[in-house]
Length: 250
Image 1 (spheres, helix red, strand yellow):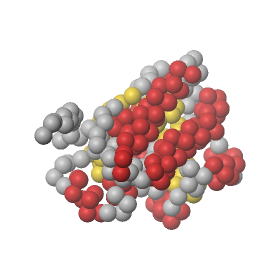
Image 2 (image 1 turned 90 degrees about the vertical axis):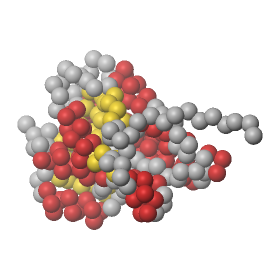
Image 3 (image 1 turned 180 degrees about the vertical axis):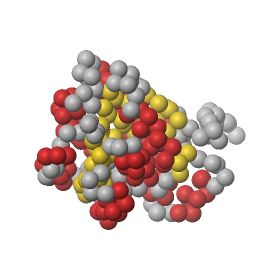
Image 4 (image 1 turned 45 degrees about the vertical axis):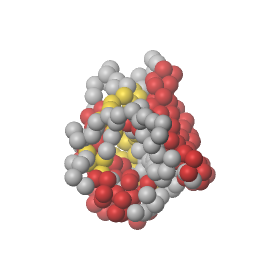
């Protein structure tokens, strides 16, 4: 029987790559995101039998509720939730950062993820499905300017472990995937549309690609049902752990 994945943040980057990866492996995908034109392009590319789209802002509770209520009956059996939607905004240290940016990251990376998971959990339990949450190495390794973004991703990691504990005995698998540097629109968004800043970060770094992470998600999702990957951390070979900072007296 064909399985169905629900993928948030599907209009670009890892989310769009995951839609293509799962459809290529024979899954049906419910693809969600804010940009309806990009969702429509995925349907044109992959076919309406393989992709059903829901255009909404994942942080808009009312819009999410409407979209889920309008799901056709044949798309309601969801076997896998991929909580991919998320963002980083700003690179300034906490004392200079935008509170608006902080609130947006919390609303998208934490509150929206929790709310959507809560909505879909009953069906996932019934079908002994799976949840893949996209966290980040920023959940584990702090860096200057990471502040609230790192905090939201640490929440995602811990929430994933908490779900595993609560779902004990239900047959539902939960995985936190925690990538390092991946070249997508992520850094452009973080720098409020500054393409030059994004290009400078990735130049010569040989970062991971959206397809790398999508392939990893498919691997996790297609493991035998008795096997759970609790958390999976990935980095490009070119990236490793930063050193400690030391402020010295003049």
